[in-house]
Length: 222
Length: 243
Image 1 (tube, rainbow over the protein chains, first blue to last red):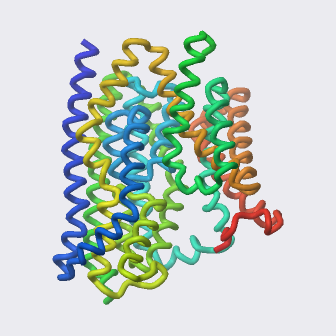
Image 2: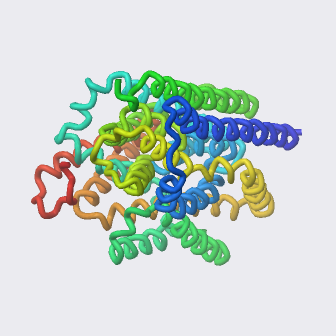
Image 3: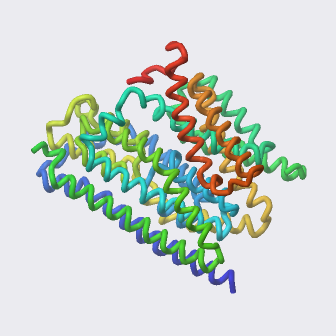
């Protein structure tokens, strides 16, 4: 009975998730279309193609990898939502992980799916409201947010986020964490320029961690 | 009025923002109903909502700063639109820069030609559109595979997802540790503050702190990074830190 109810919920999430995704696709495409129509200014297709060639090969690959890496962590509802609202690595995934940890539910479980979706929906609403407020109060907020005093704080937001998040997960799973962490530190020390493409390295770290976890599991060490 | 900041552009921004809020509310309500059916208590749900909302404030302000950085070339509404839907500062800036370079212009100068403006909008939109195509096609299969894995071997299924988390965390920690002293100090401060919060929660039973440990660690570490940046010699700081 419980299984069939959960299956029905999942089916609904996929059905409506797809509808929302197609809706998002239409909204996204309609933005440049309506701009072209309203301003009467269609761009030179060659210029668009040239611009796309500069970003698409990298970002289409990164986006595809991100879908396969983050979907199992975020759950179905969370994935449908997080990939429409964006900012996954710096906001949605940490929020989902932190909330599942605090609620003591496992990622991938039915409860984990619910908590992850609630966390991602809440962060999406908060971000959208803060951005709208920022736009509304643009002239008042800009001098404060761009003040030189605050620059280091916002440039260090990722270490500040992953330091706290990392210590919890590494302390709990240190046997699995040591190898991917050591691998990443050595890699970034050897090739510092990779810092700009950290998203591409997330699945690499995941593969190392999965490999180590599998070996330890087979040996009965975890 | 500058076309980049016209009422029409703000209207588009409002529509996109409303769409994102509507989708978020839809999934939030659906998850709340499902949570109730699964017996997840109201207090857990409330804590999840409250702590996620508090946690989201600092990264959202960081996104807002990224938005401000794009306004000199693109005006206010287009960066707002792009960062509201499938956006990330790490993507939008290179996309806009590449598009403008292809047109022989620079991101440092305001766009004056509407055709260049729409070209940038197209590149920023199409360059990150893949998840909206891949997810409707493949997400059900991906999740089906994970569920099968968990059914076949529950423990390995859980370890698999934990390993995915650790892969992500390792990549960002590795980047932080190898990114210079300021980054290392910020990272360690955040970890230390999280540890202190953990002691308060576990030893002194300050339960409410559990949901705010991450925002507190983050805010504390960010505040300390200002202090470190002012104390450390300039040659140990990342290039362009103050710009």
